[in-house]
Amino acid sequence: MSTDETQSFLNQRFGVDLTLDEATLVCDRTEGWPAGIQLAGLSLAGEPDRSAFLASFAGDDRNIADYLASEVLRRIPDPVREFLLRTSVLDEFDAELCDHLLDITDSAAFLDQIERGNLFLVGLDSRRRWYRYHHLFRDWLRHEHRLTAEPGAIAQLHQRAAQWMRANGMVERAVGHLIEAGDVEQAAQLMSDEAAAAPGGEQVSVYRWIDDIPDDVIKKHPGLALARVGPAFATGDHRAALAWIDTAEAALDRVDGEYRRDLVLAAELSRAVVAFLAGDLEDAVERCEAILATAPSATATNAVYAQGFLGASLFAIRGPEAGLPHLEQSAAARRRLSIIDAGITAQLAAAYAELGDWESALVTATEALSLANREGQQYPHNAAAHAALAQVHHHRGDNDQAIAHAEQGVALARDWVEPTYLASSLFVMSQLVADPARQQQLLTEATQQLTGSIGHQRLLHRIETAERRLARPRTRTMPSGMILDPLTPRELDVLRLMRGDLSVREIGVALHISHNTAKGYAKTIYQKLGVNSRQDAVDAGAAADLI
Image (tube, rainbow, N blue to C red):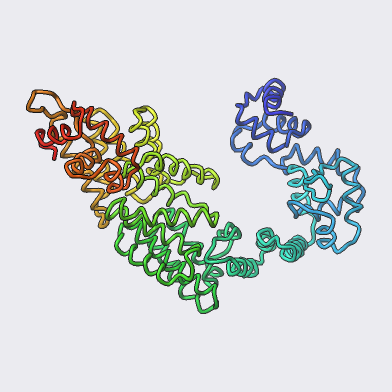
């Protein structure tokens, strides 16, 4: 059944009034199996807490279990039943894997019999080699197996599955089976071995199991200890992050060679990130520079991240001109190595936007959001990408889109524990709204977010400048009596350089913006000052005490 058919059938037959989202969940869990949908409806009709039921609905539901036991199990020969129960520990399988798991040689014949008997076997490839069980059927088989298996039998099956998976290069699945077997020591060792084989400090997918490994086991493996640093960052627990870094460094004697060297750099990079998030940007700069001085290759993953955080730190301390070269180098290396890192890419977009390089800001911010989607998340530090897009749309005169992106950036930043992302997003939004009272409200909150910050004086200065400008009259009067619209800080930068002998192209180079962007600023300056030439613009700016 389709989702619409599922919703219509359940609502009409059982009167449960499911929403489309709830019907989608039922359809996904049952994989459109009509009998399964009907059985779900029977259970739903008697459930006072529908949301809780849908969240936990599986093959061990009483109606599903009764149906499968009475309508399916009774017609299955005992050898096939035993094969189904024991192979249910596998998510996906072929005959070779089943032979190894059960120590038999005729799994292909069992699979053929099961497929011909329509016993909920789903083919995964056109060669009819790899299969899985229907999810509800698998859940029920696992439930039945737990009730009937001898003590330790299921753990032994998981051990044998892990053995085959590891031998066939499926390390991540092997780790999962070891954890299911309760062998967390071996699982941790396998994760460490996989990390040691990864080049240049590259993150490995087996780390997704890190939360299933007890702390006392992790402490024996420095790579796993460092994998615990990221979750501590995400909760703003810098003390816990530093504690895990200390733990990793204390266990470095357990490893050697290139892996040890990579872990030393990774630990130092983690300390740099802690410094960056804590606002100690000068310390972050020193640590990143030290990593880049000792990293064996500019293509090593640790070096790529160090270059990015160096650029982000310099951007925050000294401005986009200082951070841009490092951010661009990190972004180029990230693309070469296929590293997905939306955060540094978003910082690069923010730097382009502050410089007024609108085309580069648009392309880079869009890329940052796309990278986040590939990771399946919208990370709070991607607020910088939305802020950049807000400024791009504002420059193009589309203030509705500008405000929409600014609001998304602020909303994302509010979910993040590090306050400077929110302060930056609030500042950008304050430059877009028309209401002076709302501008001041946003600027005040931005200042509050930076209370106690030791490394974000440049952002504080920008906020204070905006507050002073807000306190002044909104317009200036020319000697001629003409009312003058205020120039933005970047427009003032361009106007000041117009006093010299630089061409518009050379002004663009000096400000690290494109020729077209510099021309656009000049055109806007002429319009605001009511003039038609460069010299008249300079004269008008001087007369209004702008330069």
